[in-house]
Length: 205
Image (cartoon, rainbow, N blue to C red; front, side, top):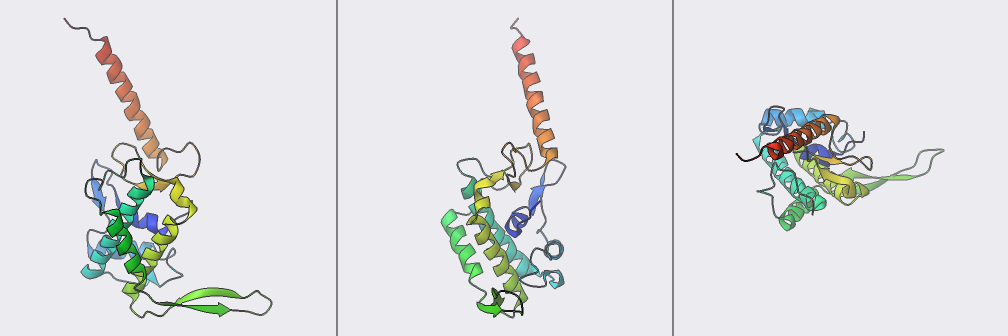
């Protein structure tokens, strides 16, 4: 399964397994754990596994997440967004401006690499020394790439009971982010059908 940093960031708000919602970025310690878990995804941008989040970085990442989730909600419209923040979404124009501003905080320069017996290749190198800025800009650019790419068309908000995740639809009949959500949704539908059948069989006295 392919992983996208933007989707991973949005998914730090998730179902806690007990009927509620949890936030992986609620503390600086939790944010540090999440950054370290993204080391492979962000390896081209910075040594993310070596970063330790303080409260300021945590706050900036969560604000960026607000922007990303607001734009995810716009992307899945007219279908409903994730229920986790549907009533308090950042306005889409504000989210877009914030995302672009964070991406622009890191200056990058192009560099060509041309090894013997190989074709020349270009890459972008950071001219920013602050690793926190580099991390934030990398996450913002990843969100820009995600939302401007073909996967945006397949972005969905999971409709299973209690689930608040966004996911990328990988095949035509996929309705939920993972099999356990599908099982829960089917069980809920079965219960609802059984309840309706029971209610309809009850006649007034």
